[in-house]
Image (cartoon, rainbow, N blue to C red; front, side, top):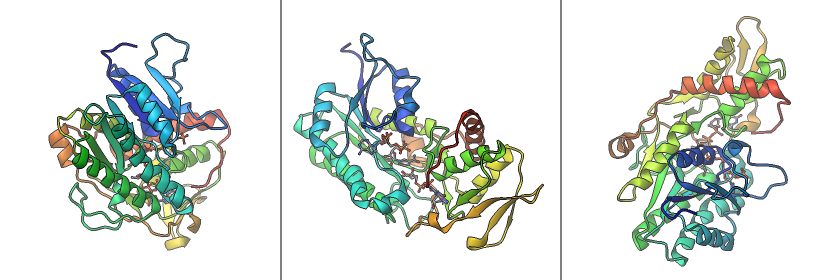
Length: 357
Ligand code: NDP
Ligand code: GDR
């Protein structure tokens, strides 16, 4: 192990952001360690191309079994790896699922963050290990003001967002109380071909690809009036890294500054495969038809409505632009088209897989 290499530890390395961040840090010359959960089937698909056999000498990427609900495990991993930077990306990250698993979500997303900060203290790494927390635009919840910035008040609207609110404030508190270089990235929605299959963008692009290939008949969605500020995950992980390179820790919004209704994302995705969607009906009776053939392709299913919804997110990334020199590049429309193209390849290859979300 080289002593000059910077060492990073990523929790949630098997997720969308973890996969992009691991690649970025390897490119920058870091020695990367990742925390991976034990699972009954392989869960390393997103990092397949950077995976290194543990038998190679002097590996640059090492995976450790772990879980954010297990303090002693986290302490041991941090002690063994002595990271210069920790990126806490692990979470039960699905908002709707958090209504069904509120206690687990609080444990992993809220207390899990505390466990890592405590591990830093217990091991005496307050002055040497920098910490990034994956905070979220879901903290804004019920609309208080637009666009939403670092000074906008929080009003979380789901067990997920409430758990992330605890995490946000414990990070601020440990920064102030113990001088830890700990920063919150308040990231607005970011997507990619690696996005989890049950988040709305990926659900749409997978369905569009499957419908185009004749493997699926219809796409069922919940609230299509919801508006999101969608950027590209690959660009957002660069912003995370930049936060930890600052002399002082701080909290930053990463966003595009543009907002798009779910319905519009659906239209772009179908357009990419040459289908123009025509909408008829309203509310739960709204349906999307192939304008050329009259076939119904999109339908509302109230099971995807949330007990409390976040209607409108639009971020103000001015601080990140001015202090970090960070800016998004990919528009939501470009993202939709890239994801459809990627899913056409994925879907052509095998079974479409089924999951609710
Ligand atoms: P994903 O759902 O794709 O990945 C989550 C990761 O966390 C996976 O590696 C998952 O493991 C792991 N994980 C879940 N629970 C635990 C646990 N108890 N212990 C250890 N690991 C666990 O999320 P994203 O990559 O999209 O998001 C990364 C982070 O950023 C999350 O914290 C999310 O809440 C937050 N965020 C995401 C935004 C987005 O738009 N993507 C926006 C703002 C914040 P496994 O692969 O085994 O499931
Ligand atoms: P979100 O993402 O809740 O913003 O959280 P998601 O893609 O799940 O929902 C976005 C919006 O689309 C509406 N919607 C549907 N959502 C899903 N999943 N499935 C559907 O069928 C559907 N139909 C309509 C939702 O109601 C919502 O308004 C994501 C996660 O990555 C969080 O971890 C992260 O913190 C936030 O983004 C920022």
